[in-house]
Length: 271
Image 1 (cartoon, helix red, strand yellow):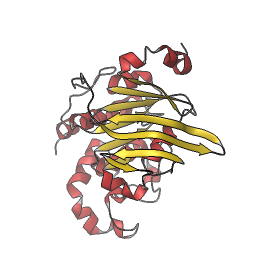
Image 2 (tube, rainbow, N blue to C red):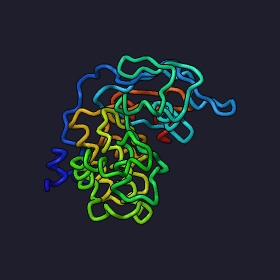
Image 3 (cartoon, rainbow, N blue to C red):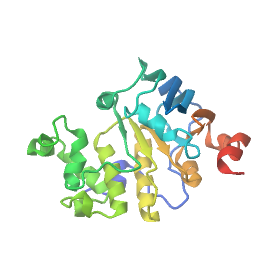
Image 4 (tube, rainbow, N blue to C red):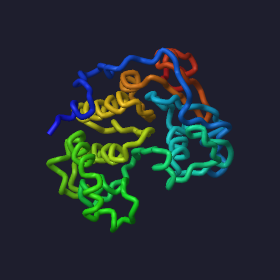
């Protein structure tokens, strides 16, 4: 069986190195954009009249302090929350909100910071669940395994989960559970990926593995949005950065420009 670097066509990363991809000189159309988006909880605006776009085929770092609105924005864009006001455009289709049931139609996939694994189900079945059209019981039938067998094998290898494929999710270590979360989105073969703090609490070896997977998606021309507090990983992986502050857009652009922005340094980087 092919090794993971052959499957995704990337070179082994060394610590601190970027993906072997030429950075863009300009930015094209936005694959997702929001205009005047507002979401509030108990009268407090988590997203406050936000207008911003996510460039197509780019890796976007979504950063900001706690309570800045990062996860709320991703939850809106992935159908977990409905905004009070504003417009969302996905591939030229305008919506007031996105339904979670529509994500596969839009070819959107995401991970969750708190994990959404089914603890008493095997690694294989957890991987198959997001790609089945059936209900929970029907989704683990042999027909599902047959339909997705090739992709299942590739994802198991990419995430180093082959030796654990028959184990229940509850038996996995924290790092392997994170890889299983990543594997679930890879199974969906989406065009737009949202990763909510995918590196949190991981040992360096697994951080490298997740970086390799993201680099592979970059080479395939996927659009990737990463919520992450580690600025070295943001610099390493991202072509573009969006900074939120109290639900508003503070800055956006190339990493080297945004991270030199005085307002960003003062409000988020503590400089």
